[in-house]
Length: 372
Image (tube, rainbow, N blue to C red; front, side, top):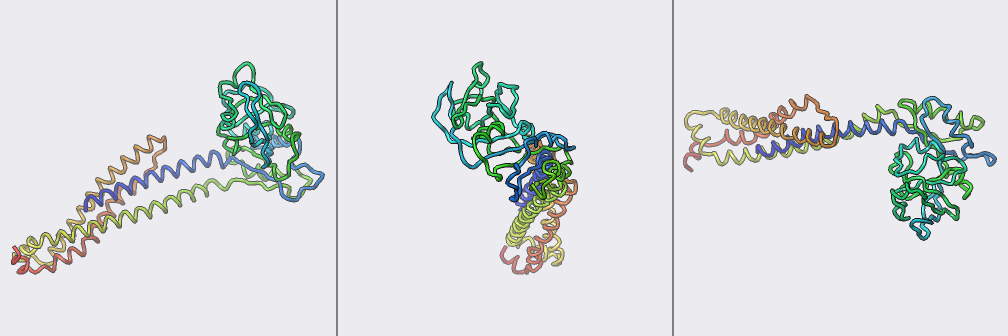
């Protein structure tokens, strides 16, 4: 019975501590990325004589207070044929081609491996970044990009110099198997539908909503409802939802662990009363009253539960601290948990001891001693 309580207490305190630490980590990561991201897409009602985004959209964005970086992204669902042409010639490979404004890479916090440039990623440039997976398929290594003679790739018959290999752009998804080229260059290669356009914007902390409100007025003041602007929810509300959901799950697990522990204690105590019939019968024979036996059994289950819970709590806390330190998390520990778990275990011990105590109080001393 003590072992069950030990395991339950260790599980409860470790899960409570780890979940609180994870919730804090998730919320912090959200605050750092999602709370500074604004995504803009066009509405369906676009006048035929109007571009989805103005040609100088990137420059206009910079005039909005709170904007750190951002620009237009255009991507079609139709794949293009991409092939390496010099160091590692390959046959044509189907790949996505994404056109972006120059500042989009700054807004995505992308890591550029082995890049050759600084070379301007301007509107007429025929340079490209490629995703890691596509670079491997084309036979272009990270080291080759830094050689004196640049790698060239062909996109629909047009040669591009490989400027670098992209890894993990946080706001620009699906780039691992894609080629990223200047937006106006992409628009020269093919015709795009309005739904192929979007805009990625990185803002300063706390500025996302103001930036989102200003974007339509700055980019298309002459049009009514030109864009759908996706701004992040309030970070505090998001944090509360994340932490609330995790806590609900943890409390459910804690209740289940406590129930298992209580059943184990009750079962062990009940069986113990049966095995100790002679002891209880002898106590009754020398004058012990039924209430004395009830108190004895309940006290035993209470002390067993409280002691096992305290030891288990220390063990679980050690596990939680070790995991948090190993993963670089800030350990979040509620002090009231430390007092609540042994207290709850003691109460469960009392409840678990009621039935065995009742059984002990009803032992007939003559019957018990006859079996000796």
